[in-house]
Image (cartoon, rainbow, N blue to C red; front, side, top):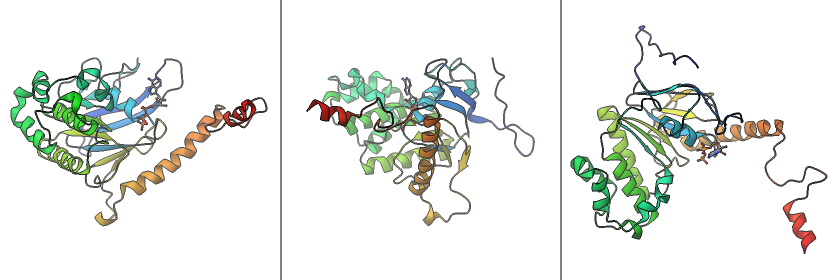
Amino acid sequence: MTADPVPATQANGSQVEHAIDCQSLTYSWVVGTDPVLIDVDLQLVKGDRCLLLGANGAGKSTLLRILAGKKLTQTRCCKILGQDVFMKPPGGVVYLGTEWSTNPVVRSDIVVSHFLDSVGGYRHKERRDRLLQILDVDLDWRMHQISDGERRRVQLCMGLMGDWDVLLLDEVTVDLDVLVRADLIEFLVSESETRGATIVYATHIFDGLKNFPTKICHMQVGSTPRGMVPWPPADVPSDKLDLFTLALGWLREDKVLRKDKEESKGRIRGPKTDTKDRVTFYQKYDYAH
Ligand SMILES: Nc1ncnc2c1ncn2[C@@H]1O[C@H](COP(=O)(O)OP(=O)(O)OP(=O)(O)O)[C@@H](O)[C@H]1O
């Protein structure tokens, strides 16, 4: 049993009210195996918009799923709006991930207006109608006859039409066309600026995002060594801000680190040509033909 996380303190001695407060989170998918998250810290105040940036397999989705209360962790170190995300999940937290669109229910013959009503759309008519416009959704679409991007737009409308305070977005904008994506980003910025909504957004696509984040969290092979990096950086003029170049530099660093880490455990990616008794796929293919 570990102690509760320590609340941060401001310069004047008062405690900061965190919207998300995750400290020293370590997590293994299978107990007793190597952790995929090691001492992860993620602390955001209301109104923050955090870009979660890292290589494939770095642990972004795992972290977002834990924050969404979908995974039981051995230590109690994640709070949202002051409440333990698993033991006492707070209201107002929306998690949107890619797995939703593979659910057979959302690919069945159901009209979008019925679908949205079935998840409470009639209770949030004003916001639902605003989102229908931003996301350019046709209420007469049938869920089994629409494209992946159109289905994603319905998912976003469904997720965002209620009263949410914290939004956890896991790469769900990847199949949106650029116009819908740009309008959605603008909507999210206005939600955080006007009513203090807090957003964590994991993505590999940085187009049109340079004015989105207030903080960047670099997830490096399961850790967060840089903490919360303020964005935009004070010393860089706005025409020189470049998320893509920043990400590329960090991911090159991560690749070396991950390789060293894996090699120290005897794991090597790529073709297996390093041992005497092991033949590669191509060698096997040659023998067989
Ligand atoms: N169900 C699972 N069981 C065991 N290990 C898993 C499981 N899901 C993910 N992992 C492992 O956890 C690590 C982190 O995966 P995660 O999906 O969080 O990465 P990610 O940063 O979101 O990657 P991507 O950018 O590819 O979405 C990976 O090494 C992955 O192999």
